[in-house]
Image (cartoon, rainbow, N blue to C red; front, side, top):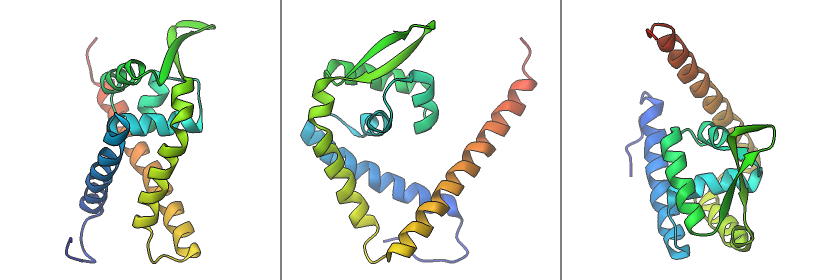
Length: 158
């Protein structure tokens, strides 16, 4: 267990939880035949189908090449299909196939198991406050990242 320290930086705690989450999810997902990299994409697609590869990359916080590789694996597993956007043929939209809908309950079970373990001992009020805080932290992180990336790209010579 990590030593408690009220003065500790936030990032190491987030990284610690992320690593353990990936290990837990990876172990559970391997029983289903795929890994944690695909888990986060499937999670987004279960929430909303028809997202573009770029939208998926942004939502899960990984670069486009990692998203493309993970989607290729999901295609090989028969879980998704990519289709050209009818209004912009350069954009591929991602849709779940019947096989993905078939494993949805098992997928959701894995999510519930991990959430239950993570939130053990929290009251409903504490859970709601934590989720709201994590959403704010994620929004702040995304804004800070995008601000730095946008500023850095202004100085590139084309």
